[in-house]
Length: 223
Image 1: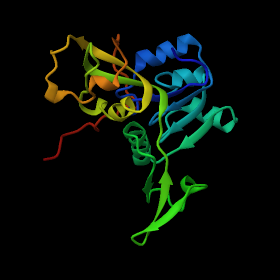
Image 2 (image 1 turned 30 degrees about the horizontal axis):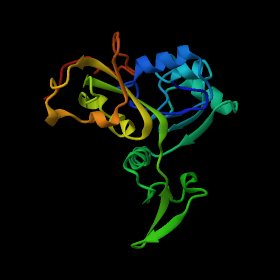
Image 3 (image 1 turned 30 degrees about the vertical axis):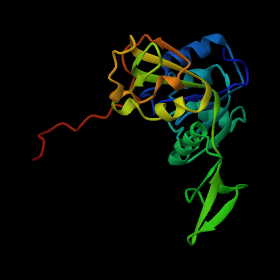
């Protein structure tokens, strides 16, 4: 379904809660000139880093990109266009896109390059910058559990950007660890209602990847 030049919103934070099956499918499809909206760009050999390897991404709209050396090289060489957005602003711009909000004012970024070329307004004695909503042609999300009508449940920190991303596209695709029949999920636990999801499937998963493994120093724990 995805064609060259599409804008795709991705759930995930670091390597947690990323739609890894969908990213692999995009890589294998060969689709190119993508605009990808994601909190970050994965690492060199996993997540969106796989699409950077194959140079399928034309533009990244992100918050944090410090774990990806391929990203750095492509940006510095002019191969990759980048728009960096404060993390809270990115989340709110996507949420606004899903909620039909035309724009919002925030003090975050005032006085920095983030505010360049944007409307500024003073309210209550404080300066604010106007930020516009973000929507995509597609949203790719990852959930712990989903039913065949598209209702989704996320697990702990893997929830992250997935719920807002799921609302802000023309076509939302969800991959889930467990695909169950309608009625198997307690309605009170549903986070993304099925009305937002157009396509759902059960993914295949190996060992979970970790960006940086940090171990506590050896020795006796202090009380």
